[in-house]
Length: 69
Image (cartoon, rainbow, N blue to C red; front, side, top):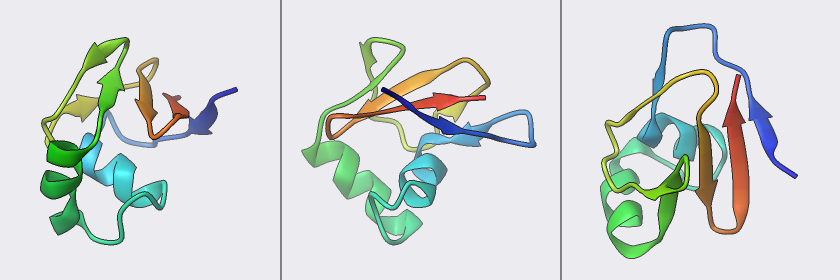
């Protein structure tokens, strides 16, 4: 089951999602985290912390799924 992440803007970045979900403590840790851990966006590997996530995107991180809505 995926967790729903509601956004009020056009997009959020992958780094913001990791921080908001409590996976990392600060935005500065995103680059390191993405280098060391597997993250997928809509079924494809993703490692860019600045990647824009929009409504309908699904991110899988550390066996957790997040759906942007």
